[in-house]
Amino acid sequence: MTEAAETPSTSPSFDLETYISRYEPASETRLQRLLFLGHHFHGAFLAASADNHHGSPAHAPSSSAAVHYERLACQAFQMAVDQMKETGNWRRYLEEFGAVLANTATSGTINNNADNGSGNAAAAGGDGRTADPESTTAASPLRSRSDSHHQPQGQSLPQQGIPHHQHPILYHQTYDPAFPAQAKRESQARLETLEARLATAQSHLTKDSIRTALLALGEFHKRRGELREAWRRVWKSR
View 1: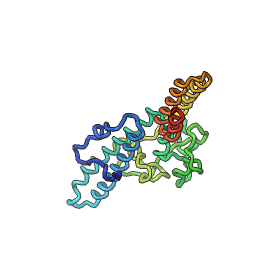
View 2: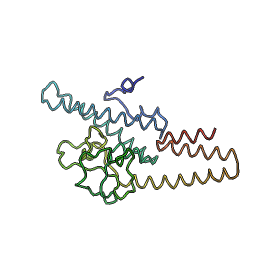
View 3: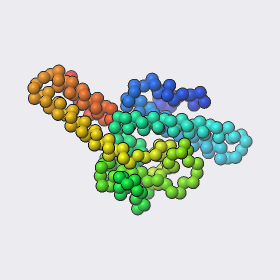
View 4: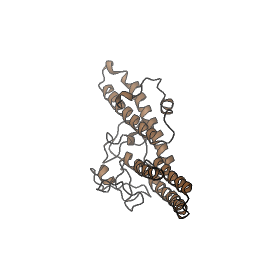
């Protein structure tokens, strides 16, 4: 079944929390679904808003429809951000926000000289890799100064150099520059602990301990969306 066929009802009675509760908490599937719904409802919000701007009485209901879609998009993206922060998935966080290279993320200042067309290429360091959140040119989306249209839910507006149709989460959520660096440090510390446990188990040649350590590493990578590495660890435990 396709994603489009699985899109839930957008009626006023639709309850996103009830709908998403069918997915395993903190799972990659749940995160992917929340992000899909966020993009879907954002598109519906833009379409309803465009209809409303025609000014025709025939389009009057679009105003309430736009508010409804905007609320659902904001809720879906907020739940996705909460999950990414809970699991320490800083890589996906940077990708979703389309973080670009700025001069410093610690102060949250904006680099006015950043190329407007950098987008994901800059976030990937030019070679498809996600920008290092602890780099001296840390990742930080640039905020738009020119957008004067409606600002939804009290959140930040689309940001300069990153079209919000490519990264609609920017329209509904505020980028947290401190999270990626902090999450990476915590993840690295946790990974070192788990690797040390595996090394100890291997040195004692204890099969059950080795398997337990590998499964713990697999769960660690799974929660962070690193599915290939998670599968490698689980496969070695068999």
